[in-house]
Image 1: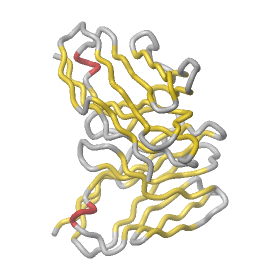
Image 2: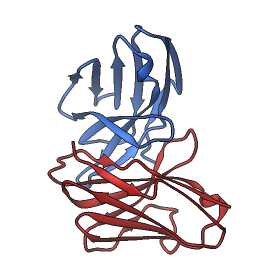
Image 3: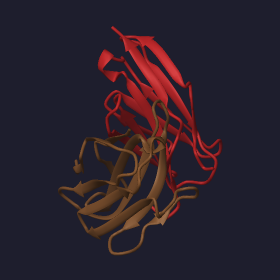
Length: 111
Length: 116
């Protein structure tokens, strides 16, 4: 299975702290995306990083990609209680737009 | 960003009945739509890929006769769970990509199915 793995599975931090989540995958990719999901809701797209990019920023989010290690990380700086959600990475299968999701990290930010 | 809707948001049905879930792209032409299912506290598992006007491609282990997918137009795909059983209870999410969406998949809000 191509499914990626994320760690940690669960993370609990205090408001204002930074949260780092890691994603590892198994095969070569074109793109890697990060999504957020609030409990029982649909997914919200956060950021897309291409295989030829190493780092990308969007607001308080910073994503890195290391294709040699087949891994990516998502950093949320100055976390807020509203950041509490599950975060998933998704990797594509070359040329198909088909994305396979990682196992997810459940983040809890305590006020 | 692009909007994808799903209907219904939640459905309860009796075992043995069929349930249809609709997925619509509201402001772009979805040449490709994907259907996922998600069990509680687990990740999304891709069930099938559908391209407008052609048969869906199912992932390994997904019964195509049980999960009927129709992608008849560039804005609508339907998933019908036939002869539903309690083990089919899950959260079903669709996503769409196509002209105007770039490489991003836009996800619907999901449909929670409970089979009694």
